[in-house]
Length: 294
Ligand SMILES: [Zn+2]
Ligand SMILES: [Zn+2]
Image (cartoon, rainbow, N blue to C red):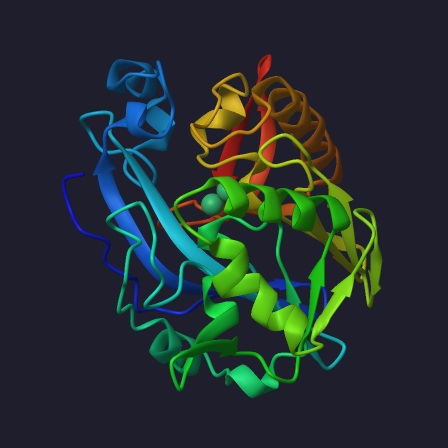
């Protein structure tokens, strides 16, 4: 990778009816060779989509990826979605291992304290979507968002346990189990109505229990994607599987279904790993989809 992650310092915030969505960035990395995340996809393939330059792809056809959480403020609630990689976690990827990101500083800059979060939603339990749920206290992993209910789906919990049992890193053990042990977890259905216009939709494929989050307020809609897509280029190329997709064919079908729903509804789509301008709309352009940042 050509450069180390740098984090945007400007707070990005969008309105959806009377609700607001705020991005809190952990890291953003540009100039990544596309085959690192999309096996078989080349820089030349990216250069065939010039609309991606410069926000999402550089002039050489290399891609950018951001790791960010979003906070949804609605009806007096603060809902945190996908709290990133976290600090001090033992991870196989060198650029996620034992990090010291200034994420909590960005969180404070955006006007939030950990204690002010009342709900934590994980689209799935990969390392880059759960990290800040825990931090080290006296050498032990302890919940960070001590006033929040943390929502998990049964299938995703089972998958996370299974991966931890086989693997070289223990995301379940360091970032999920301490939350369950503290009594801060709720198991919810993959299509759970979370109230106040918040609703989960199963978007399986990337992981077995993956969900995305819809918000509807005053007739306006938003969709927090999670990892059913990683990059805006996949709007035009929904067949491009990401290296971490558990069931690539199911992930492809999910992308098509979700793109159709997002395009039809005109929802504000917040791409969990999108760089620079992560919010926009999925529009049809001829016989393909495209992402139009707002
Ligand atoms: Zn993932
Ligand atoms: Zn991810």
